Length: 472
Image (cartoon, rainbow, N blue to C red; front, side, top):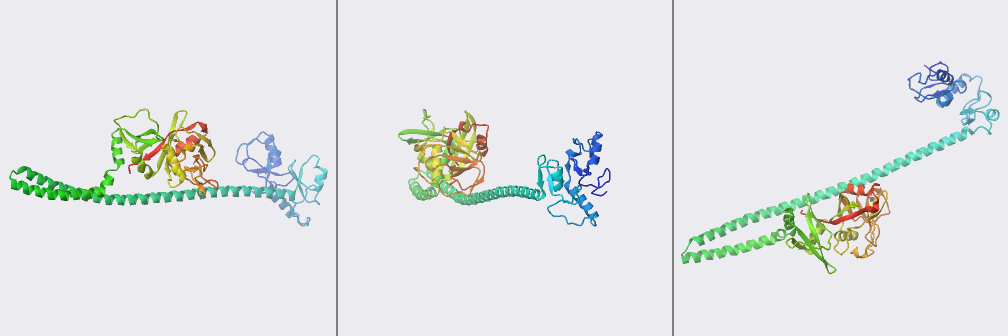
């Protein structure tokens, strides 16, 4: 079957009496055939039997490609008679006025016409006409606009992928750094264990020698033997004192680490209070251990009662342990409903980071406990505070360098003159923000829940805050 023929009547399409029209399924038939089968009540495609809701052929779209091809076929068959070339800005010869070129499209009747048709049959008072050059120009502009939109989407996707790649590279590097540090720590601990094993063997040998002398001294009653054994014992004990001093010098710091003592006490379920004097008042924090054996130290508060039998440490004793890992946490709640706890890795070398650690701990008097978030947008949630008492490094501590990209979970200062900060919830390219002073280590799901539309952000509160004293 010829592509330019109607498959029902087998007649060629044209641009007048047998215009090709498309059914919704995509199959094309001439207008008279469609009118005939629709008038008989048939609402299915003759080819694929797909249903349609067309009332008549005029309600269906014209297949202009087939129509133009059919018209060119007609013109080529009339080549000896029609010798004038068809201008690029026209669509062939007018079937009613064969000496005129088609030049307009009547958008009111969806038909192509010539100048004579425009005057006689499609006056501007009742029809809307557009010339082919204008139509082509409009088509070009629409195509360019579509291309521009597509290019914008591609650029947006490219930017997103660039950010994702950068984030992945940063995460890979952080993982490599952590692995490198862990391997270094393992190597140091293995070396330390070798030294420890050697010291243990040496001390066992010394203990055996001392016990042997003790047994000999207990078993003799002869004065001369007692003097001889006692002299030998003093020589051995002198050597033992030297050995013990060497062990204490080598391992004493590790053997007396308060963290190990804390861990053992808390593991047994006993209580430890950390006490500090702040502005003439005694404040304390009760330590507790979670299921991952991490020791939590909450913000220092005024305590009405402290168990006198509980172990007690000063803030100075645990301060080195606070800043070993620089881990902080906040617990979020809404109307007394706890959402969860978020853990942060704080950059203590950044002034804003030191300020944040001071505020979660409350070591200068004020803390984040009880503070409420003040706003949110598509990329972050913000907590605003202007407590001058809370700022430990003074006002105007500086912004730091501008960030090239913002990563989900970053802690960003919102003002260089107070303790306001934002937690980033969505990565983006930016030149607006400065100084990331920490990142979410775990609990990002809690942040995303708190930032969701199901809660009023002004009801989201920090009900607990503090730092982590890790055993490792």
